[in-house]
Amino acid sequence: MGRRVTRRNFLSTLAIGGAASSVLGSMKAAEVDPTPGISDGLLDEIQRRACFYFYEMADPDTGMVLDRAVVDLPYAPGASSVAATGFGLSALAIADDRNYLDRNLVRKRVRQTLEFLRAGADNEHGFYYHFLHSATGARIWRSEASSVDTGWLLCGVLHSKAYWRKDAEIQDLASELLNRTDWRWMLNGSKTLSHGWVPESGFLPYRWDAYSELLAMYLLAMSSESHSIPASSWSGWRRPMTEFQGIFFIDADTPLFVHQYSHAWFDFRNRADQYANYFNNSQRATQAHRLYCLELASQFPWFGPNMWGITASDSRTGYRVWGWPKSQPDGTLVPCAAGGSLAILPQMCGAVLQNMFDTYGPQVWCKYGFRDAFHPQQGWYSPDVLGIDIGITLLMAENLRTYSVWDAIMSTAEAQRGLEAAGLRKLSS
Image 1 (cartoon, one colour):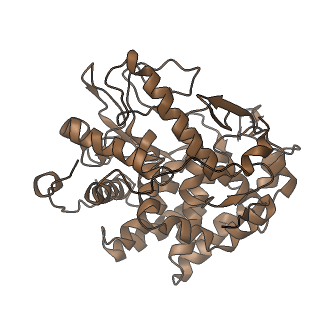
Image 2 (cartoon, one colour):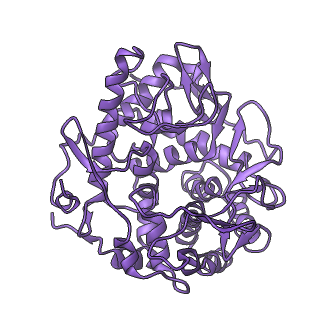
Image 3 (cartoon, rainbow, N blue to C red):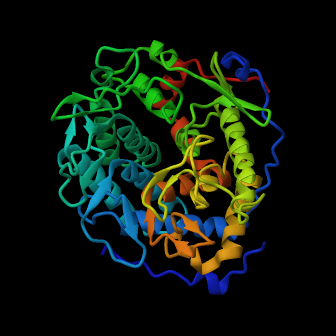
């Protein structure tokens, strides 16, 4: 296992109290209470424990972060995901900024990770395979060289570049990784990006051609200094409108996480293109998701106004991708559903995490924060935590508290080029 860091027993020392898409750009979001529905002490401990996951469950030599881990077992080499590693790079910046970990250890780990990505991890045209062996960097499970998962990795790389401004080695490595990703190649002759490529058969038949978690990926692709895609690609994907209980928003029957991930790094507040204000859209999507979960309370009475949330996660029957309203949920609750929208709807989502902690305590709470999912009626609490689910909660908690991830990313030339290409301009107050 990586270095175990001594930390205080938090639970014993801290008391925690209880239409057309173009129309969307001009519509204002519903009034939102900006006051978090969660104590700052619990927020801090969620972040602290998540940062320890990204340090302890990364390979000590390569920095590649495990896709998932059993909470009671030490690190052992296995399947890492490049998306989790991207969240991990951001986690290291947060850990340093908040003094959760020793700066020298954190800086060394960032350098190790970037260097290994540069020279040791399997990739194709700068796109990394979705799953790699954490100790060797070799492709596993015949996974694809993934465009969107590489996007999450590069968000973490860009965050590292922004945060460690005075470290020349980190600057050089981060710039090399950002610039060698051949986004034009991933277009494969189309206006929209392919989902990925495999050596056995070439490009996958699927494209990022409808609204989903694609916002950050397209911004990175358009901002590349060496392999940028045309700005017209931003208009190449569809923005289907949907409605639920009077709430209109862009969605394509997707899980809630698609309205969260890009917002973990890029600050879309008070910005709009010719189609939409995407931050307001995510607010509406989260509001609609909560109402959908409240409808499920007749089937699952443990659901309620401050106890809701489903998305892609573990379940008693394996990994499930719960979208809505076409999915068939089974009563599982997923903390990162609310956690991933903490900075989008603080009161509404913070109250869920506070209530989960207060109600289920040690059953759902572990050394790395909330377990991935749980089903209280069946007495099932996931034995695992997932890197991307912990990661989205960590970054959104940080943006809620300080905006530091948003501020770091938005300070970069890469972010500004992407926003300009997309036509995402600041709205007047």
